[in-house]
Image 1 (cartoon, rainbow, N blue to C red):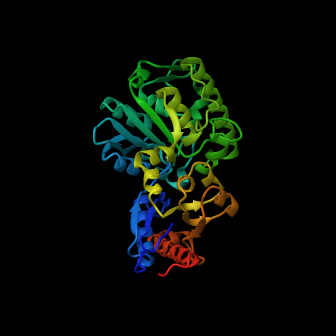
Image 2: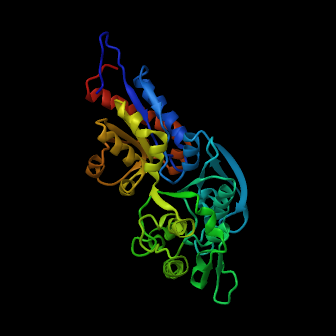
Image 3: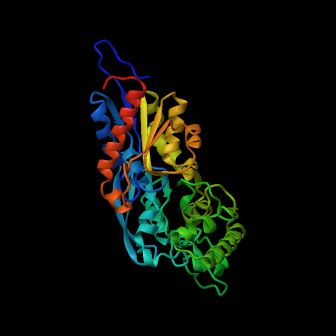
Length: 392
């Protein structure tokens, strides 16, 4: 794959395609750092950067950039009911909107001591989607990741214009705790605005809404839920799904990805007629990633932590899958590594390196992330050069 023409000069084509390193680097910053390290070893290499996302952190910027679009800012309801300034992207032709649910209902918008999925809402996400549709967008891409919520899209429904009522016919609450009190859903014409709009939910997990692998049991504890809260949320989501089936005719209980973003995946299907897709596959398609990889000699990817969950739809494993399909070796540089190396090799990752060269605190690693990542990319390239007996 690597070749050395007459004269001994290397001609290498390297694709750098990282995800964001959560809490440290955007995908764009990570790509720049990795390219810097690569050029220390292969200064003449043709390095092509394709920053990525998988439906979670960074999806807004990555997709808006891929579509040649611009960002707009809207004042919407935040996860705890207070107004927040949330951005969404609009493509150059004005027909596609890109929404990252975390802009309006993300865990990062809630102070650690106040995180409680019983009290958080996705109403602001619905307000963003409604605004994009009212502005004439015919395709709305919604990234599902980094949520502070477990409301099944209950709050979003209100933000879209649905009337969600309790047993007395009054508006129900809009948070996870209110799920148990929902008695009726009234369209009120809200669903009509999506008859000519394609809504795509970009998920980085395949968990369903309910059950042992459902959103309450798997993800709510990460958002501050106690065991008692998890039981209440599971019961409330089950009730809410039953009412959705009765009033809207949509069965969202077990669809793959329905549990993404605290059940927002299921809510998007129910209230917007959305289809759920792999966030990585959507990003790969819109960035032309496989075409770029097919012309490369090496692919370098990365994310904050490479672990068993990475095998279920995360960007680095998706990159490695495309690389293997095209006969290109793939290297992953991550902040942390855990899991069985054989599983990652089977998924297409030929080598995996940690960016942390010695014991250090998480805070130090995050503060030094650009330099550490550049150094790790350099180490990876030197190991590859040595392994292939290349002259550096």
